[in-house]
Amino acid sequence: MEQRVVLITGCGEPTSIGAALALELKAHGLRVFATARNVGSMAGLAAEGIDTLELDVTSPASIRVAVTTLEDATGRLDVLVNNAGVMGRSPLLDTDLAALRAMLEVNTLAPLAMVQACAGLLVAGALRSGRDSVVANISSIGAIGLPFMGAYGVSKAAETALSDTLRREIANLRIRVVTVSLGSVQTQMAVGDKSVPLLSGKPSGFFPNWEQLDAAAKHTMVKNAASGPLPRTVARRLAAELVAKPRGHIWDGFPAWVFRFVVPLLPVALLDWILRTSTSAGLVLAPSAGDTPKTE
Image (cartoon, rainbow, N blue to C red; front, top):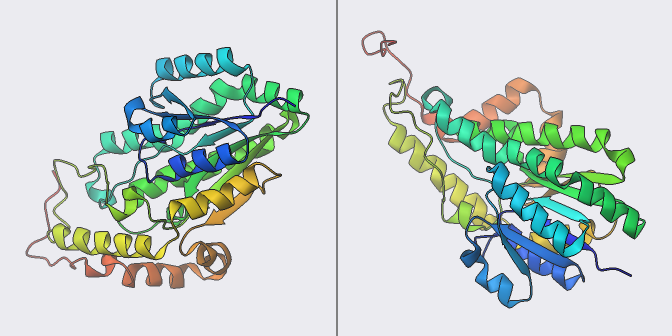
């Protein structure tokens, strides 16, 4: 039997879910192609016998080179994991739209670009193995609309919709699409607060205490991440699903079960109140007639 092949994006950080998943899937007997913008950042994975490729998921040329290299080496793809992503914090009123577009390129459009580029190889993998190929899109519970994570939430909500739609559109092509909604995990992105800048150079003026709000939001994010599972724990569970017959929607991380089972049952007004009062949104200063910022 031919060895099954997996391509994973976003493996550059050694403590990332992408890197952990690469190791877990290799342990399951798959040939793993791990990718990142900087191949040197994956030296540890290469030392474990994992193929590493340079890939910038926002560059069509880079995608073509990586997919061509994969095709020349294997002629097939059985599992594609769209894991690359970025996050950041800002009030939506003060979010730089160019920065938001850049985030959408990575978190939303890149997964679709990867599926489009790899579709032929995924179909080939299904035909050669006699079982469905798999696309796993790593999304987030942040899609619900967490205060000051709006740009990230928008990108992940769109990715979730994209993933769910793809699952229905290409099922007959023998490609099973999986949406993975992750809560907090002890990744360097969360615990180390590796956020991309999103603030506009012309703030609205409605958040004069933004430094306080941001510090509180950062504290909550880091605390939740510390309460979450380790990347290798999530990767172990996810790998077990991907090599079998994965569900269409997988939830993991802290507290994913709340967002899966409880949140859908809450009235909108109650959910809004909870998210406003339990986050730094509750610290936003009410405007007064004397200091309302002027619209430019």
